[in-house]
Length: 303
Image 1: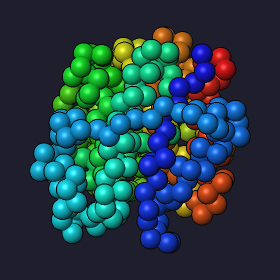
Image 2: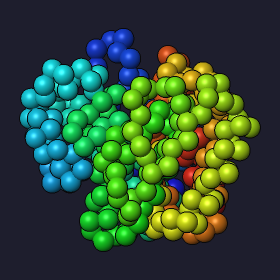
Image 3: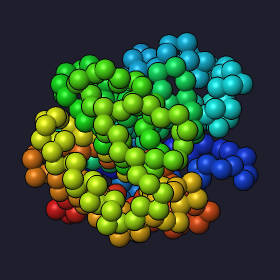
Image 4: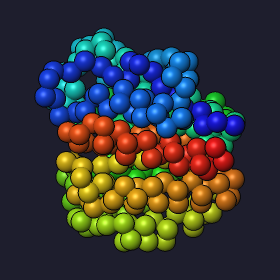
């Protein structure tokens, strides 16, 4: 079976020229996936509907959710998020959250699925932050647990920044386990406490990174015995990323993704992959890095 890919044109919301967040990368990624034969040019993706209030409020403060949905965020909330308080940004966040939940459902059916957005891991229980309005992985994990689709989920967050919002949402939970491996000195300055954190020194390159991941991942999966893994495959740990502090090559990113999929597949655990962070003025190069996740997911499925 071909790799299920969740996408929506409204994953892109209008921003002012020169904004630090590379919103256009989602469109470039779609073109990259079409060029690689992973996504048909017409009707080739699975489109999510918007996540509803109760779904979002299951992991976020209800008052915060209401302010986002009605475009009445406080000035402080908007500043900390770094994205404008517009209907298009709100729709994008709701679609991304629902898209990750859909990818989770599809992964349970076929083994692996990917959302061509998501990874908004800085949004915590009370507010958003760091270009993250709603925490899509947290929404998806909680949704599937609440529905009884899974009883245990594992979040593997390999974005260069710590998944601090996710850690705070699921603090003290045993059914949803958060593992974050990130650059120790990168954003956020004040780290949360995940169930398992590995902070890497600046400049960590392919060999050291892969050794650290392979040392922990198989034992972690065996110990937790999750029924589903949500994988944040941020590419901001690439050496050329303008907001990263690690030094992975594109081959290193590919080896990282392959290690994750092979380890999970070896023990029969489905994986829902999400895009995560990536920041580069060369948007085509950035889209090519993000496309590695989908290439390796398709390879793991035998495509």
